Amino acid sequence: MRLSLLASGSKGNSLFMETDGCRLLIDAGLSGRETIARLSSIGVDAATLDGILITHEHTDHIRGVGATARRLKLPVLGSARTLQAARHVIGRVDYVEFEPGTSFVFKGVSIDPFPVTHDACDPVGYRIESGEGGIGFATDLGIATRLTHDKLKGCRALVLEFNHDERMLQDGPYPWHLKQRIRSRHGHLSNAEGAALLEELLHPGLQGVFLSHLSEVNNDPQLAMAAARKLVDSQNVCSPDLFLGWQHQASGVFEAD
Image 1 (spheres, helix red, strand yellow):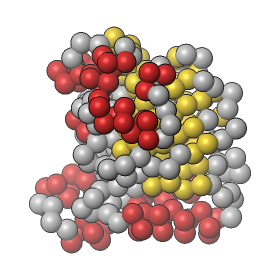
Image 2 (cartoon, helix red, strand yellow):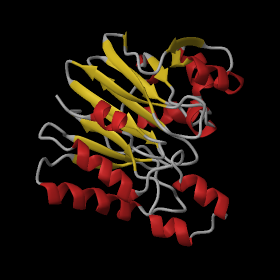
Image 3 (cartoon, rainbow, N blue to C red):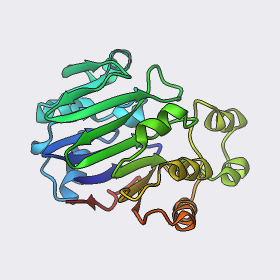
Image 4 (cartoon, rainbow, N blue to C red):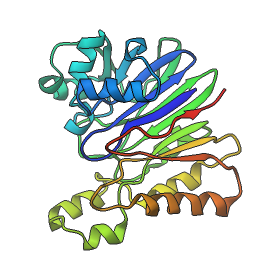
């Protein structure tokens, strides 16, 4: 099992994951060229990818999907509504539709897309299960619902949203309507909310946690990491490796046998 956030933030998001020999991107918000370059930076040949999963139609998650998929001849997997909303950005590719709430098998791994709360037409998180364990992915969500908690329990690795520091957002330069949108049930999780979600998901088998979608304006990587580290240390349940997602470079790589 290998994971790395190729990019994370408001300017572009993409996760590389490999499990049981299946190599996927979750979202591709960078240009096709930059996506391939960042894969190379972590030692991955882009030609070995099997597909691209998309979470929702916002541009920072799908900007490079079309170029990457066409260049590498990859299928693009998403919910029917999301794919319909994203087609004008992605263009002509091989689309594979799924229904949120219904798991399916792709290249030998089980993919369970589940609804999340965000201001998009049909946003989803993912639980990806293989013989190597579970990978949970939930970013761009205004609240962590009970369904989100249930879907992400027992994972070996997690990618969770730590978007903003509440005080930095409050005192920051964004207009009031945008602050309200970020704080809303269809916006983004704060560091405190991300840590609260993580608290529910700690278990002895959790080995890696990625802190994702950090705002460059309304967050500080040290604050996000401190929130996660304080929570993990206080619970004494497990000692997962913690990784920060960055906007301008790939994160560290989580590897598990």
